[in-house]
Image 1 (cartoon, rainbow, N blue to C red):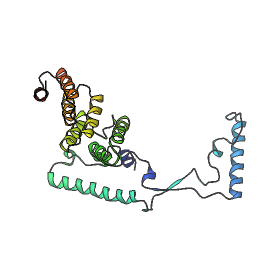
Image 2: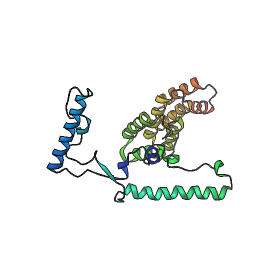
Image 3: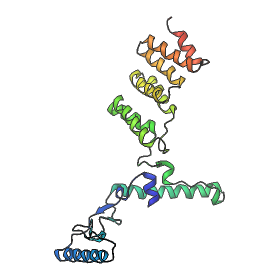
Image 4: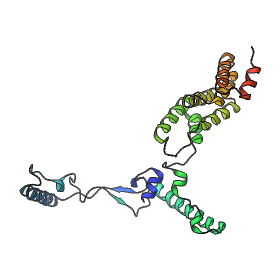
Length: 243
């Protein structure tokens, strides 16, 4: 179970239904309080709890039985648990097929695990897919905010690919789809985090050209050449612009 929770970055309640302990009767509550008081008195007499009080035995239980909420592990009512069963069967099938097909000793075969894809997130989608969907449904502002939030939370976890190529490719894709505003959002964000990305400045120039902003395009290309004087794309794009 711990392997599953770590792989998906969740707690047991993600799949299992949490059950509150049944309430104590008045008699049971009084007996519990009396036992706690007696235990506290014994501790005080031994010098372990000079301040008296109920001690640890009477804290945090309220009117419930036991130590707190429990899981109904047998229930399959949650969709997440039913999905988990399918995913576990899929992982086992993949590993069995690998063992059968590779004909290698078991110690030499890399086994697929939940963490292979999930890497600490419940939905193992690629970062570009997550951002693209947000851009399409909520706009560039929301997509930029999402990137910042995900980067802050997951940068050093391996859950997402935060290399400069991710936003660069999204910028190129937006340009190919004739969406220069989207491209500008991706590329400006990229140079914020990767200020030495000459390729991003070249694509920024192309986005500015698409917006009929030749002055900004020239400035972008000059930045690209300052970072990479031999950049052929920057030289070619600069030659095309009016002097």
